[in-house]
Length: 183
Image (cartoon, rainbow, N blue to C red; front, side):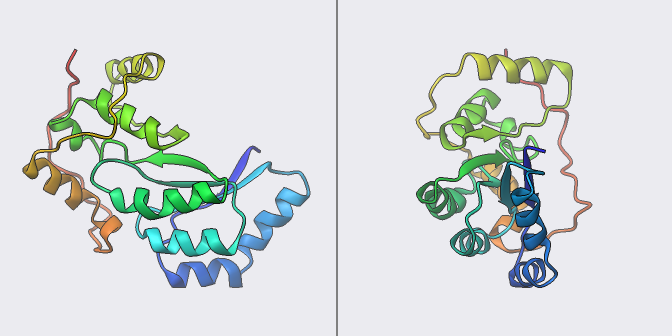
């Protein structure tokens, strides 16, 4: 196995449970036994919890949201992870396609690749997949300057509410039409 991750660390209770019940210790033992090469931590919700865990253990990677609506992860967690020599894996690149309503998805993909070492990108059809591959093959720099109309920003932040420490039902699915990329 290449990597084992402690996934979706939300709060202090999660952090204590992972240490108390030994999940972290089991991962460390698996790595020492050669059953995995790398250990990682992931979080959707709170950059500070990730930052604390990063300070307390020498993880190899961190998986976290990366898009223009969640700069708080870039400002704190990515900087800290870089100082620790960790790999950065980006998720929620398009905020469940909400950002693609107003921004060229290629710009969002490029944005994530400028910030992360690897990005996890969803797609809803074969055409989306082909465009994602083309973007990865022929990127253009976004230089982090992506302007988001206020209404789209608010919708994306609503989807990312967990990131700003406010819960929303896990069954929430935005009522948006199937997003088609511009050619």
